[in-house]
Image 1 (tube, rainbow, N blue to C red):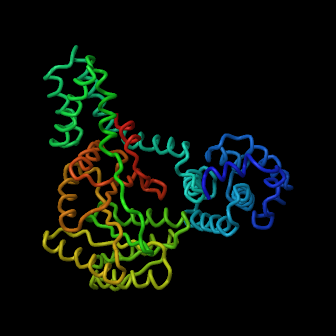
Image 2 (tube, rainbow, N blue to C red; image 1 turned 30 degrees about the horizontal axis):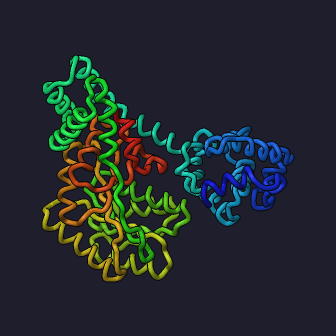
Image 3 (tube, rainbow, N blue to C red; image 1 turned 135 degrees about the horizontal axis):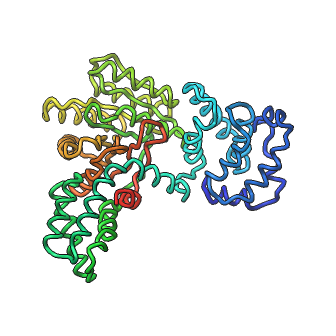
Length: 432
């Protein structure tokens, strides 16, 4: 269900339609507990509200302090008012309550942000302006240390020069290098900025900040790619140990599940028994299926059996974890190549995407990791984790410029909601 159809339902049509959602499925128990009086008030509030999920949620949660039948009823009411299928409504509420019980959350403020995140995905409202603003705030908070460092240096640079000269360009390059943009990328960005300033006849040093932000955003312009595939979609996830690969897989499975997809996770990192156990735990928490063999098994065999299971049992998405060992480049290439080969043998076209997970806090080491893995197993997308709180956020620019591989997601914290789609303009704004 799309955003505009949601708006049409809330603002169009006869008012009595929105005032009479399916009583039984909406949790009539909660309605009875409140005498049912809240339904008319909530209907009016939703109709008069701006079309923003956060505002809708404000109305839904008004007067609700803890989880229980009333919250379930009001959430069900929102789904019905947006004409979501009853099965999707019930599945959402059941899954959310299972997660909340597992986490031990009772008070609304403990789980509100997660609830909004789940609703945005389930109701296809993630592209709503309000959600984008929420992401920008989260990204801005995460990049605070990086922004403080580069901002302080840029302020000092621009204030110390009365005009734009060669010395300024040299110092700007140094500022960018200090922010972990990398030597090559810093030189290229400075050169672009220099050409543009000359072409647009920019005289004031302070005016370079906006130009720099635009040039950084331009680095991340998305490239066209073929989205068509033969289901199930198979995603291969690679990266060294310790970068947050396992939790990233869990977050990807979580997102896909909330979008209505049937997800299978496969543990092809068979050299660490703890890795298998951890992935199984996360798969259970996200409601995904799980496939593994005993520790020490052939990773390619695990991958083959997993894709066979995904095809036979009608899964929409298969996410395959791999070992993060970097003993030798030859071993890495051999293992990953074998996994890719057997995936394609069982399911032509697989893997449809190969994702590299890298840790933003490692700075320039992220570049060497990307180079090594890209040579071993051509990468389609990059996910950057641990971007929250790092002073090395400039590495995002370096990776994008040096390899030209799309950055699709960024990790901004430990919660499921903290893996967010990457947006170049939002990143540039938060950085500068």
